[in-house]
Length: 376
Figure 1: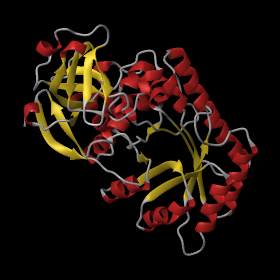
Figure 2: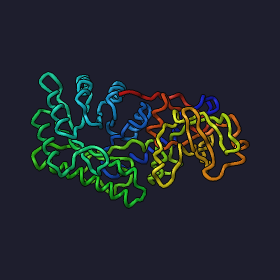
Figure 3: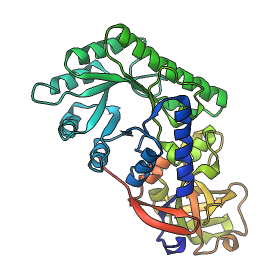
């Protein structure tokens, strides 16, 4: 197929850029001497996860148990479910263990640990549990220097669960854009997670794994002493938020949305396209950053960035493309009806989630579609 054969909107993956991104991250982890466990929630796609493993990844990270089920059915066995375990999901997780999946789950409170231990009574498989550490105040986890860490560790160990390690995610890295600040946060993420592991071990509790990661900190860490593995996800595609953070360039972005010009508002300098927020998602992650890309950066059909042209607004099935400054009086001639454009997304995870499949492209050549997983 050719691009012109595709019905729009369509999710495109520049396969050469994607492979370059996978290679870059894996080479960095190899150089730092740690295992790499990619987070597959960004792509949720078997061919992409297999490419990551082929490059050297060890195991995968998922954000839903449905992902774990689907990847396990496809042959992936070493899986970390990196969302706090809720009691109602324990039977679903237990069923995966019973089928032979090497599933790790996480806890970040004594209540969650107690529920896990209570569920893992004789007759049920015992869980391997990692304790989530709050290394930057971004989201969830326990403080590495606090009493709750030790209480959780002792409860799990005494209750028959396997205390598999500690993990953290420095998600506040998405709000930074200076190399020194990113490197400092990467060191904070590393040192606090290592501290948590050291405290558990000093108390006679097992803690074999120390897992850290976000795409920015993984790429900006100066060393990872004491860490056993790193997790990252959006690096496989990158996006405009990551470009603003400073860990990639626009020509590293592998995911884009192919769209078609369907009309104009010439007096306003608008071209109307058939990709709205149902295609791009409502994520406006760059709005709070130094460069606001609206709903996405516009490129020509070949993927060449069209400087100054953004998807400035979006309705459900309509997108408005215009120049970032004064209205373009020549918009009708520049983008006649039927013109195909590509739009680079703010947040690759959110945009990818709008589509049931990806189309891998090399230049104008379109390969067979790659299906995407859904569900919880």
